[in-house]
Image 1 (cartoon, rainbow, N blue to C red):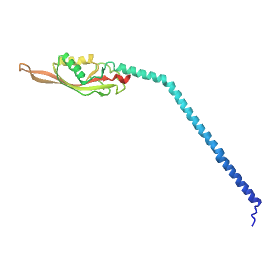
Image 2: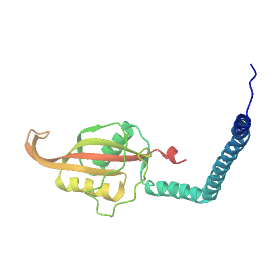
Image 3: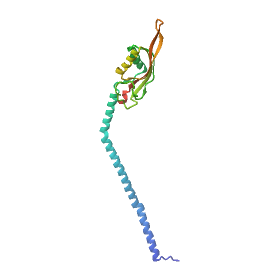
Image 4: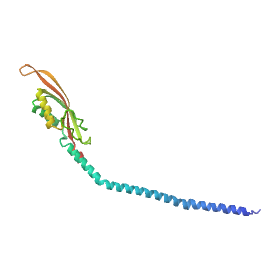
Length: 209
């Protein structure tokens, strides 16, 4: 039995073969080129964005350096009156020495370990607030409780001395009361006793180096 192809069959075969050739050409020749062009375009856009970001970063270097320099200057200026990092015994020596200097008897003094933290607003200050550093790791605060005994005039001398000559020491709270004591001759006397909560500010200058 012979299979005879009619003209219609030949036309359909030729059409199918042509469609197949077109499909194969598009799929394996045209499409990869289009995908390559699109990938190249995306890569070009990414490279352009990266280049622009690098150019902006390079252009901002001078202003960044100036900002860093200004920050370091502000840190140094704001903390020039603060103590360098000290041990508790050194803080004790400062506060006890100040009490004795102003004629007061130190009854007790307890000092906590210095912790990072910015100074709070100072209620007892007679001068405008100083600018404080913006870094909490730069400023250290040692808080302490101190009980002093003596005349009210000497207590206020102590307060004035801190205000005028000890900018790194702040009185956070104070409470004055009258107490009765026996003197060396066993006489009953009344003296003022004041309970201070103090803060001593130090700075770790290595942070700004």
